[in-house]
Length: 358
Ligand code: SAH
Ligand code: SF4
Image (cartoon, rainbow, N blue to C red; front, side):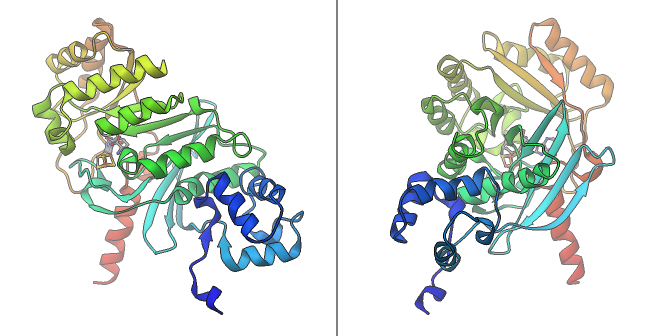
């Protein structure tokens, strides 16, 4: 009876040794932890009753004290091309997050959320406009991958890449994000290659430094959006605390230590950060750094008057970077018709709900 009143532990929140301890505490031998881990991350089982090689008594005990995550899909929409699938999930406490599956470039990429909302508050970002609610747990982060992995598994396909580019700032929820990275790359489980994971940050310098020290070849994407501090502070408020000089120093150290190029995200906003002179300033800022720039025409949001740059300005900006030897790609705004921008589905859901309630 007391057990019923206690909160169940999500097995997805446990690392391998914590899972082992739980199994031992249930009076089971430690090899049962191997089996359980395999059920969770190789067989992608969502229910204890499916874990057939575990003794029935152990499954019943697990049922009493634990669960296998608990994301509830509330809404799922596909882009008209069918290449982008976005899901709005309810967490156990009723908060909502979004995740996206992208099926192109021969990859099956999951775009994950790490927080409910975001404390950074970038004015052009639907997530930032909604404020911060809470951090996700490691299990809530991993569960987003498991959801899509199960869907793909029905067609004998697998998740191939992960980008931490959904809602939230991963490096402000460092511990949970890093535990999720370890779970996702664990050879006993999902076994994703570390090189296939990319963490995107608004530029949290201590987080980037910590990431460098981990020594794993996880990709780093930095949301730059502006070639100087004055302008960058308008895009990314946290730039007040972490100026470009410190940010670039951390990026240089990352490249040196990890041996991978850094990706810079640059959302092009008409008339604000998209001039040829700004492209030259950007090239200057990035000179000598092993990097790549992703140019993304802004995805307009209802709460911001900023508009995306016209195609000719995007081309002009890119040509200038090219001329100065900076490699860049213009990212197609795939999935625009399903509001694939960061946090947009969730904010639409919140709008609908407030309209519903008058
Ligand atoms: N907080 C992290 C990761 C999540 S945001 C970060 O900021 O990097 C993922 C990316 O989407 C960031 O590069 C962010 O700047 C970008 N983004 C957010 N809203 C956008 C919008 N409306 N249009 C274009 N890019 C946007
Ligand atoms: Fe947060 Fe990233 Fe959105 Fe900025 S762009 S508010 S850091 S999620």
